[in-house]
Image (cartoon, rainbow over all chains, first blue to last red; front, side, top):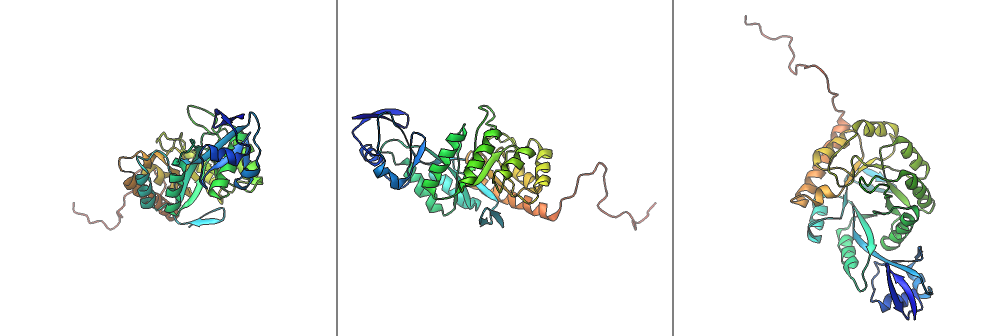
Length: 66
Length: 257
């Protein structure tokens, strides 16, 4: 198990890649954007993107805005 | 017709999508306004949440151009990353670049704005910078790669309308060939008509429509005011005078005394 920060909250997870983490946390949909430690991780990179202890993961979605 | 980067639209109203009473009222307002461009944002999605997906569907179904924004960003790195994430989701190079520098007035941080505009333009983005009416900042934004400018006319959400008309006029005169869009501070259709009469190319607004008692009706009112103001600018409005000038010729008037 490793500890990562997902959208500002600490999580213990067994996921080894970003896409494993999304699945484990029940995130799905083609409208999500992800970043790890301040860098964009594109959709097609998620399956190969390794997660390590302390990574800061941001998962964003479209929202109302002006 | 109005060309913004490589896209041409006929409506000169850009509409924000926040603060409507319901998604259905947002959709009604967008349709009734005739707008072809809406602004949207990105926010953290909760685990298992489908809120973002439902909103994404709603926007896609409206069939309008999407202008993602970096609303709420306070640093260059935050704004640049948000822009990249928005490009990933919405598959557009358009970005409304908003870099807030002051908490109470939501005034843009124009120093960071220019820096972020350069980074994003160099990376292929087509930047819509939310800026002040400062001419020098406007020039720097154009040098950074922006092809249009979006000055405020009053603080975001204030509904105060144009606070510095002479600065808006100077900006129009300084950048005659650059699309200028008033973004932020519009409260009423008459405000929108006023800036269009000055020769502005378009108006971006949100709260004035979303916060109205009947958003769809207000959206239509704005669309009409914007068209009226634009026509008036093209027609060449009369300048105000200090003295009365009789509309009816005096020569040839009958003499009865």
